[in-house]
Image (cartoon, rainbow, N blue to C red; front, side, top):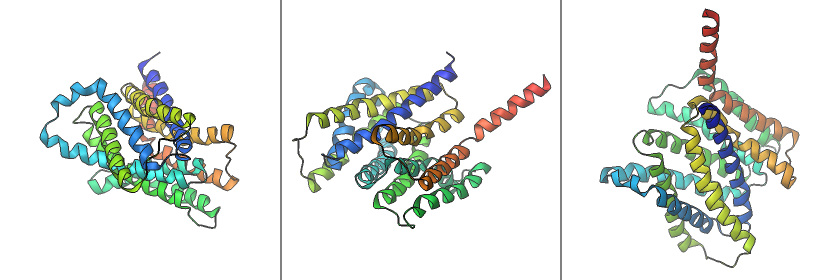
Amino acid sequence: MSNALKGDVLIIISTLLACLGWFFSKEVLSSMSPLQFISLRFTCAGLILLLFCWRAFSVIKRQDIVPILTSSLFFTTGVTIWVFGMTYVTNMSVGAFILNISFLLVPVIAVFFGERPSKLLWVSLPIVLLGLGCLFLENEFKIGFGEFLFMIAAVVFALFFILNGRLSKQYATSVLVTSQMLITGFCALVASLFIETWSFDHAPSIWSIVVASILITSCLRFSIQTWGQSFASAGHASVLMTLEPVWVAIFSLLFFSQSMSPLQTIGCALLFFAVVLSRSEPLWKKLRRSKVVVQTS
């Protein structure tokens, strides 16, 4: 198996694991308070990752703390809004496609940081608006609170991706991921102690899903994703990462009988197409180069 194919397979696996995170979280939140779940999941996952990468932190200096802390707080905010959105959303598939817009928002927001977006981005934006219109037309343009939270989370995650992309050129990925998980877990723990009442009286099945969330959808997922990105091209990786809501929709239908109406299906399809289109410029350039090589040979 070539490195490129290996990278693609690993990233697809990571999107499947990310998809499982939606269902694990939804199940746990039926019994456990949101901040308690966030604190348990990310603190434990961060500590486990720290066992394997603690040496990487030896090169971190005092001036590195602020940028790493800033990116971690963006991640914390995005995760917290997403988890609270999970407690209100009625259709996870719709929520997943809305959250996926964060990939498209990255180049839009990056314009304000002096970056030039691709031409395909401007083609994608009207398609996004049309897709959102189909989703909200289903309820006579009444936006559910869960869907609203996912839209806010998409903006926050887009800001996080921009900042994290810049920091990833300066710091090891293991340092960033571990720091983000630990800080997210700590912030959620502090907030939870003030506004929630902790309870450990949960069914064994809930605790088993919490453990699975820690080991599978946190530690394993981010490790496989990072490993895959080291092999895959940037163009392939960016497009494959958008598969997550597709898996959520398929699993929702197969295992939870949670289907979408025809209008919602059209809206989600438009959103997915717009995101893939906005991320596909590297693939188009590669295809054009291949045609030139074929014609000149």
